[in-house]
Image 1 (spheres, one colour):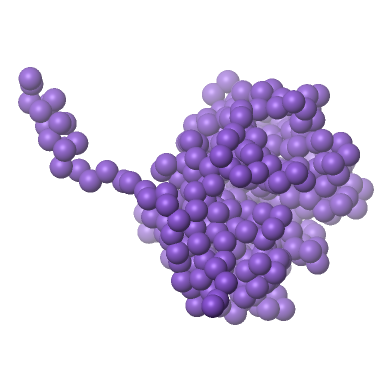
Image 2 (cartoon, helix red, strand yellow):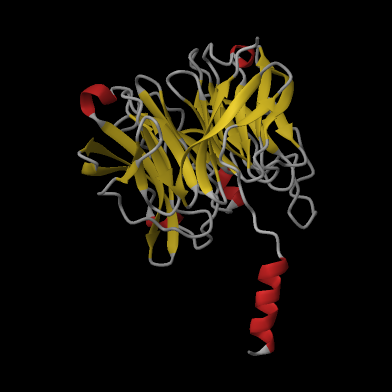
Length: 374
């Protein structure tokens, strides 16, 4: 046996393996106690979750697989008809959402990284879910090939709906300056009708004079989008080293990246000398140093009563779920409420008010349920 093989065996024996106890756990926070249970596992990186009206769950895995999970989480089946995705670095199958009228039209929406040659960009598509298969698949947003890049990072890319419009995020593709250019699609939040057509009251025109899908700009890598019952659109922006942001998204607003930022390059050098500039929006809150924000949800249910109207925020770098308290559009406080010891990718609130959290390494989904006080 050669020295290299012997060394590998020794390292495997001596290195502690990451393990997880999937039995029910109990967690205490400032205002309540809750139980954590495994809901579903067997994923690579569960990136997005969405509940169907019958309480089954759709799970988009970054690897390119889309799953339908039973109501109790004990079984899941792969959905066929998903397009080939570019699964590399930050790219793959990302968000999944259902149409507000799903009970009538059975439409679901996905965002994913699409490859042309050696370059990629974010796409949004929809299809009818029928018999564990996607039918009548239709790409409803795609960028011109000239915007595709080789970097395979900063895709965005969350999807949300109100009754009339669809909003989706696209990261800056690490083409920083283009986030400030309203003739490029990256580093933006977009608004279209549910079929991908563009409303006439969108704020910008493209370089041909036609209405653009861009709703706002100056967004680095918006990996979190959520809409509250009052219609407020919240965004989480994954910053560089420092400068993760919580924003309220409004029509035509410039959120500043990279002209203003609280972050620095990963080398520690400055990106900008400015954190404030006239005509550019300030975040409601920024995390400096970064926690590497990703998915989010506004909690609007009575089950976790003390967390009513709080914003649930996931952290990749610091590996926890936190709640952010905002009153009248102003940051008040925040609390780390769940620390699983692995990257927290997404959060979803179930029909009964339970909280579902998508985790990595291993890819799994856990469910949080409050324990009543005696």
